[in-house]
Image (cartoon, rainbow, N blue to C red):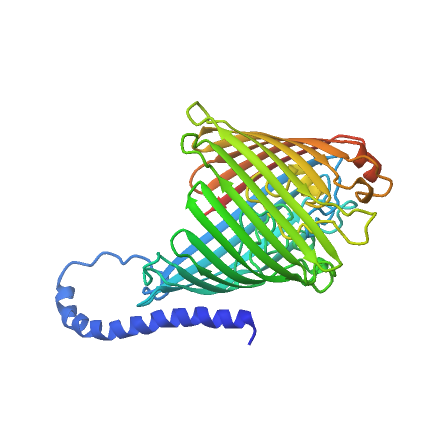
Length: 464
């Protein structure tokens, strides 16, 4: 029995439990119902019954629907598969869409509760004709399919202090510096930017959360795009301590395996991170730092780190927040036998600029390897339903000689992104991007590009 069958059986068991309980109570209720029938017939017609799902009412069911539609436009596009998944060599202009229906359930036990979910994702990339793209891409497949148990109030150390999940589900660490996306996008699946698929092909996650501490152990197998299958899977542990909502520190260990990437196969990754607002008298001042080290014997030894500081003017209109971030992802030194090029692993989008750095560069031709970036950001909140900002980048190569053949300069590009997120109502969200990037000497030497890049996007999502 494979894991999908096992989880499916588990979900059916959850449903059957509700049915069995419903049948037990119905047997008792039928006797009194028969006695009351005659009296009920003498009264006026009863009001129409509420519509039901037909599913066992002892189980709490929720239906969800997420969908999105976006249009993208490029001038002087450059695609170099910056993500771990293929772009499909998108054209100058294209459209993406997705739909994700889902059904989740919880069933209360004497101690804790069972929970599970099933969903599917359909994605499409279209309006991108040959010769730059070739065939349009679309796909439809199961996304979530998992079963879990959590302790509820059974333990005094906290609500849902114990939590176990198995199946196709999501798992993320921190802000996505190393590990965020369990599902591959783009290529034959479509939806390169949409990112509707996030569930791992198979995941087992055990979590113990006594009060402010969080301990996690996991095994994850990535759901990769078929034409870029690497057999990437990993196991590891994660710890976080939350002093409060504004102060969190964490540490993780990851051990990777891969069927086709020798450097990644057997690689250990060590991660430390802190996101804090340490001064009570200056709650608007915050800092963040993250460090990662990759080791795999004589094959690789590489480091990545970032540091950031931010200050929000929370007492004035629009509450502007100004931040600066420095990020370094080591490149391979050609003078050594060992590989120092940082493996970007599986980052993802947790916020604008994290951790696809730049809506042009980071999304379409730069990855988090052999890269040094300076980011300056200004974010404003004109209203509860609208957030907007500007992000400026300077991108440099850590090792110019391995950035590309004949590259001697470390200056790759500069970029400015303008963004806005408009929460139209509780269901609809519209996002807008306008971006400009200027290629510098390294991009000219490595890619032969001298023309400026421009890019625009409008994306509308619906969530129910």
